[in-house]
Length: 227
Image (cartoon, rainbow, N blue to C red; front, top):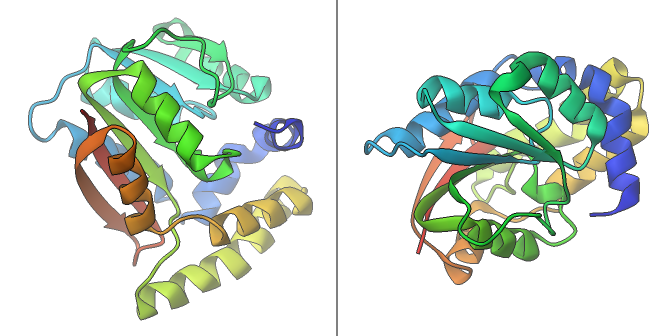
């Protein structure tokens, strides 16, 4: 992943949680809990999980609450994000600064993989999905929560207003970093639709994909099983 994007996330780390809560109207924590619950609904209980593009660790905390006893490794390329995550999770998690496209793990290392609002910031979504498939065990699950480009008329309206107005204005005001949230607006607008991302998962080693949308389609979770 590019050094410029790494530096941007390092800059906004101190206000990242505050901005996320404000931008989602305090729904982002619930979205993560719902995403993990969707993966767990059939009794799925991983022992080793990877929180990829982990940010400040909220997805890892949701996984730990859903699956007591799971060992979670948090990986993020921005060290300040991991420092904040360690302040929340302490010694209950493993922490590693790593590039999502070049993970330092052996094949089939994890039973579950979480990625919240990270795939649209990768230099290549397909390369990221391939790396996810590589480190997941067969039968393991990837839980991906993000903003996907909408296709329905009403969701297009809601999404367009959100990413063009709320995201850059509120995010820039909270972080005092307008450039960062202008970039995040562009990355959201330029990302794949749910159907396109689902096809990418199916092409690169995943099956049995479930989808759950939130807040008129502004955000969505995909849970995919590694073939």
